[in-house]
Every structure is written in structure tokens, then in C-alpha cells.
Image 1 (cartoon, rainbow, N blue to C red):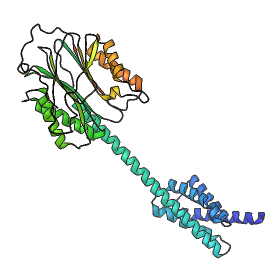
Image 2 (image 1 turned 135 degrees about the horizontal axis):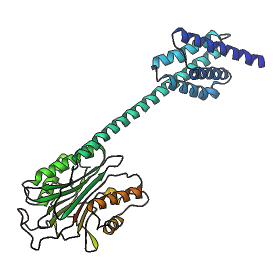
Image 3 (image 1 turned 90 degrees about the vertical axis):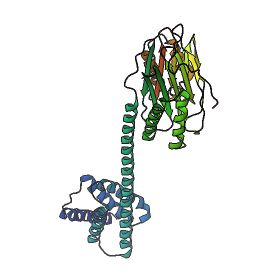
Image 4 (image 1 turned 180 degrees about the vertical axis):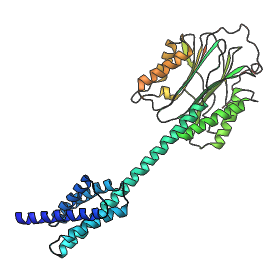
Length: 394
């Protein structure tokens, strides 16, 4: 028995040496790891002489590991030639006889090696496709972040009696948040916007651009904030996919009269703090994109010194895993720090959300308007301010 084992081992060493010679004759120098795996295949083939099925898995595993190593530098055809055909030839060159069973095992052995090479090639291709998809997604998110960042205001207006602050902290997977505070000099009013678009990636970032430019374009010529939103909604409903919706809070602030008109299209959190309490801004219409003929109402406020208006994204209130940051916690932070500058309050909210959740999974965006001056005793009229705010049915 020992002598038979030593004879088999000797023949496998000769076969391994013959295989190496064939490779080197063609200018291919296998690595130490590849050479070792080929030896393991030869040993497994020897064991298969008694019962092939018992060692078929061992042959497959060794051949698969080998194929993963070599397919990174050569093609399928070469892999089969070098690591299946040359090996089979080396085994045949050092076989004592041509017994049918032995030849049958060699055929089965070669088939298993071939299957392993094919499986490894498929798995490597899948891995390559996943890598390419990840690369494309990374590039898409980079583009989306640039779009999102480019659309944000470079600075907020400086107007006596008011402080303005805005923040957007993108999550790892970019969403569709957008905010704006813009002074319309011709009409002496400030437009306020905060929008939250469903979805992520470049599609959401592109829709942010649409919301910015559509609502901005309809400002001129509109008689009310509600009219701007109605026209914006009409365009979004026609030109965007039905599964994409936009919640948005939009306001006109008249700095001379301290008068604020708000349109709330299905958005939360949005509230106004004053007199020791925070009051949610009422919904005045549905989400944008639901139906093109939706009507939007307005809520009117006469601001006083010390009042603070807050618009935020659900990336604030819904932050968390087992527990949400929540609206109550947000209001307490704002109220406890209402004497601080608007920028300081904005930074504090962002910091507290990050501290609560660790790594945000959604964008954090907000707009703050803080009244730091006294309103005039008698409100002055403006070109647009003579209109009374009216609530219209949705």
C-alpha cells in the first residue's frame, strides 16, 4: 500500500513538473500560489481514482480559487488552455496505462476544472459590473451634490430689523432639499422658500433646480404668494413623474410693514415662535405634483419684535433609528435659544440633530427668520402689501 502511494505521488510530481515545463516553454511563469493550487488539483485527482464524487467539491474549490487568481490577467480561452488542457496532457504523459476508468476520471476532472473557470469568470464579471455601478453612482452623487450646492444662496440679505439664516447639510445619499432667502428689491419684499423633494440622487437634485427656477420665474407678475405656488404646481404636475412629490413652504415678507404671508404646501416642520410658545404654520394646500388644478391658500402674520419663523426639513424631525428627533425637541431647542442670533440657532439645531443621530440618513435643511427690530406703529403700504391675505379653498 505504501509503495503504491509513493508511486502515485511520484507520478503526480512528474506531472506537475511536466505542466510547469509546458508553461515555461510558452513564456508563462506561474506564481508560487498558482503552482501550489495546481499541485492541490493533482493530489485531488489522485484521490478521485477511488471515488470521484467524494472529492469533486475539493477539485471545484481548488480550481475556482486558481481561476480567480489567473483570470485577472488572462482571458477564458488562455485559462482553459494553461490550467486545464496543459494539466490534462501532463497527467496523460505520466499515466501507467490507458485504463478506461482512469481516462473517464480524467475527462470528469477536466470538466470540473472547466466549470470552475467558467463560474469564476462569471463571478468576476458580476463583481466588475457592481464596481462599475458603484462608480457611476458615486459620480452621479458628486454631480448631484454640485447641482444642489450651486443652487443654494451664496448669501442671505441684510435688512434692518431682521436676521436670516439658512442651512443645508447633505446626507451621504443626497436628497432633494432646497432653501432660499431672496430680497426682491423692485417690490421691497423678501421671498422665503424651503422645499423637500421625494427621492435621492441626481433626479432629486435636478427637480430641485426645477422648483427653484419655476417658482422664481412665476414670482414676477404674480399677485400673491399663493399664485406663485399654484403655477409652480401646475408645471411640476405636468412635467415630473407621478411618484415624485414636493412639500414646500413659501413666504412673502414685507420688511417695512413686518407683514408675512405664508403658503404651506403639505410641509412640516414649519412654525412661528413668539410670546413664549411655538405655533405650527397651518397647511394651506396639498403637496406639489399631486394634481395640476390644486388651489392654495395663504396664512398672514403681523410679526413683532422677538418673533422667530422656522422652516425645516423632515431630515430634522425624522432623524433617528429607534427614536425620532421629533418636533417637540426641535421647538424646545429653538425656544430655549431664541435670544441668540439666527445663525447661532441654525448651527445649534444642526449640531443637536447630528449629536442625536450620529450620521444623518437624510438632508438637514432649515430657514430661520428672526425679528430683531420694532415694527412701525402704522404699517406702510407696499406695491404688493395693499392686498389683504386671503385663504382660498384647496
